[in-house]
Figure 1 (cartoon, one colour):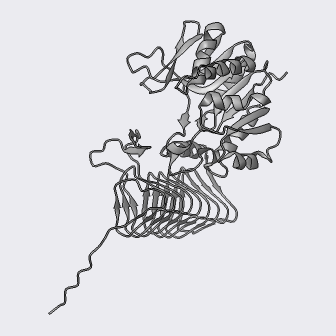
Figure 2 (figure 1 turned 30 degrees about the horizontal axis):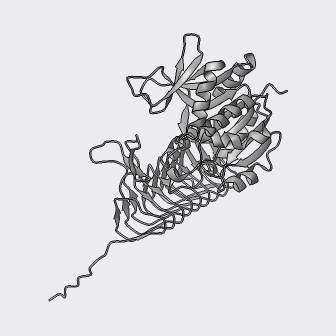
Length: 429
């Protein structure tokens, strides 16, 4: 039996919190979707088999992506309804060996590779134990905290205990090795049989197992970005941009002599960067993209076949395929594919009081924790000339915003929003 646990990669559940963006596991950071980047990393670290738990909307896309992956066995199962992590894990049960170990992780958690190596090393030195990674945090984080004794054994977990009641500084990350898959599955099934209203069946199952079996904490203090809300796209982007070292320029790219490449940048195939333009790293410019005269791209990821038009500035933003930008300002924003951002448009990114920017998700106003945040714009949206979006605004797929409109609130998918004007003509003497 292999000493390397089978991966269970959670990529299902509901993505409604990511509106107006689509499936987070399919978001592309650089040349490939997040799911493929994660799988390649797992393979390089030595994992041999994985079960991906998708949902009805993304399963076929994931199957297509993994079909050509060599040297790693990957199966895809579907969680038909978002019934929690426990239910997602149960979907993988037919593909697991009951007496073998499993390593449960989430596709949208981006961490340093050494975390997974530390988990593997800990398990291989103590294969009879289970392990949970705890992220070391000095400041309070509204998540689950590990209760750990003096010998590093986890005796329980507490969810959102409050800043003054933390049992440790270790926040639970979904990087869990269970030494015995069958035992875990039985515990989860028992929790679902209790028919309680909450959806924390997996956490309750672990809490019960901890009382009878040894679970140990693996402290971790490296990078951790979790893609839960649409503005987290910028955090994941920053991580991938940090992996660019030096300047990589494709042979087919055309860089004008008076254009500037500064710092760590990646320039893809058939890119054209016109006179006076500047790309300031860390930055990624995808295949077929144009950076026009006197345009500026800095700290950003602009994917394939985009047009960063004359005098446009793109700063600290994620811009997906096929977006059109013309003499405008894209600041701390996220654009889904095929957004048209017309001349004179600006994404305002800073509150007057310089406080953190809020955004409404499923009717609830949330603090994004970001002191600068522009707009999140869904695919195929069209913004007319001189549109301005206020900080934290989200615009839905296929929405149309008329010229000169100041967008202060979220716009739903397919809505048309415009300023009703009165034309006044005064005859001269």
